[in-house]
Image (cartoon, rainbow, N blue to C red; front, side):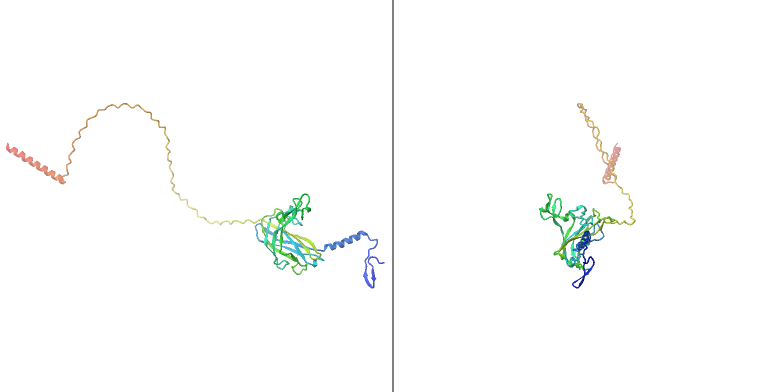
Length: 351
């Protein structure tokens, strides 16, 4: 009987037959079987979700182009078929880049609101989702609330007094979902084209500085995350893929205010302007005016009435000799004198 490693001929055909010796240790057999099984388990569905962002952004920047790429990285035997993307998730900012770091169940690293993602969200040309328009939508999930936070379908899935409720995950963690009009199918990995991947291009606005540093590098980083749920055609087998990157966020640089050049400015001459100075008008100060005291008025004493003084006759006004009245007066006086002289002469003769 041949033992391990011997060759035997069966039916004219030469073949190599391997057998295990009876005294071969059992633990070695178990170890060999584990290796064989593990090598089979390594094969299966593989899918990545890689965000692509600028390495440095500045608060206040808008319409910054970014993308998220899902790629079929399956191994044999699943690499022989397609992979359908069931759900595509993206979180623009997280305080850590470790696997699944920002979730409802692990909220310590949540740092939402650093970036605002918006459309248009379009499939990149040349990829499996070329021309596809994606809708950015909040994630609504059923969770056991208010304590556990696990996914659920009915209240029976929850314990400890929790109930199965709808939860807006986007408002809790910042993660949202890209919704295509139809499922995106990735072709088998072949290395010759880009039909085994789908790239979604979209835009972000940089709203604020991160409150948590996602890295120990210089500066302050945040970590955009990608997550995808997919199903391989072979099997079928379902799986989940994740990816992340780091972005340094900077404060805006203050814009320097231009310093004016030293242009001589004409200095106005101080021409004195006569300003009327108001004179101080004395305010009359009330004096202590004595109040009149009534006095006794003596009785009127009769006074002697004097006789009126006779008024002298008016002095005749002698007219000027040059005036007609003066001439007449002179003539009259002359005639009177002549008459008186004749009378006197007559009287002398008569005596």
